[in-house]
Image 1 (cartoon, rainbow, N blue to C red):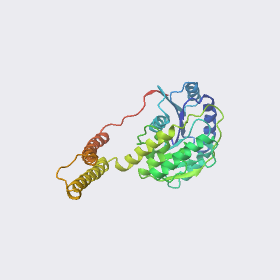
Image 2 (image 1 turned 120 degrees about the horizontal axis):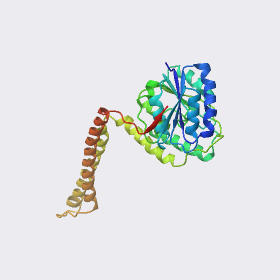
Image 3 (image 1 turned 180 degrees about the vertical axis):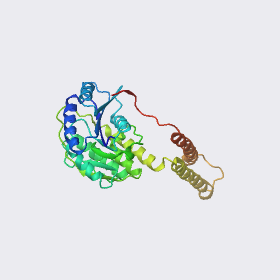
Image 4 (image 1 turned 60 degrees about the horizontal axis):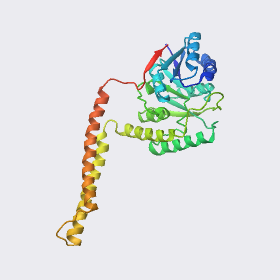
Length: 313
């Protein structure tokens, strides 16, 4: 029985994979011989797949998944979690910036009763642009979902299998896995970890991830709070909008017939706005009913994966 699974998404990291394998093996062997390493090739265009095959031939504890094209790190993490056999799953990046030597510290913290332990890169070795982007993302995360983690973007994490096996991950949601786990009622902690400068290859992150991350945050907040009751969200919005429309209409009538003492009502912007708000409110409520139907269908259907696997070694 596999005790620990290590999951590593790979995208154009040909020069780093062998070094990472050596470091992980050196760290894991004193902990347990019952471990496996899942390398998930996210459609690399360099020699990463070749290196993964070589390592698999050398050590059968190395497993490999190859995507047909680039789906993103979230899909790679999802595939790794789905195929991991260990009771504990450890994730880290393939760029060697995460230090495998920190894995024992994560496991020690996990044994203290937590379901997820996150690495905290408290001394980051990245450029100013990357640090700024991460800082903005952290602030947005604190405001929207109010989680307790300092560095949710650090890929070095340890999970209990039960906390991640049923996760449905899409878009760029991999950096918010601790928040999702916490929303699901699991206990999350963090430990300070070493962060190293990149030695080979190029970073895959850009400033556009801020906008993508914001959209994913809004989705996580909505899904975590209203995934089983969307009618409550859209229904409340609809009722508020309808009431606002009626109040504007009443004020318009009061203004013309009582204050101005006119006998003919003029159709002005205020009256048109009130009618628009009432119609919009009805649409919100209808959208809530449609959301209820979709959610019930979602929970009733079989699981679907957001990626297409070409091969599993």
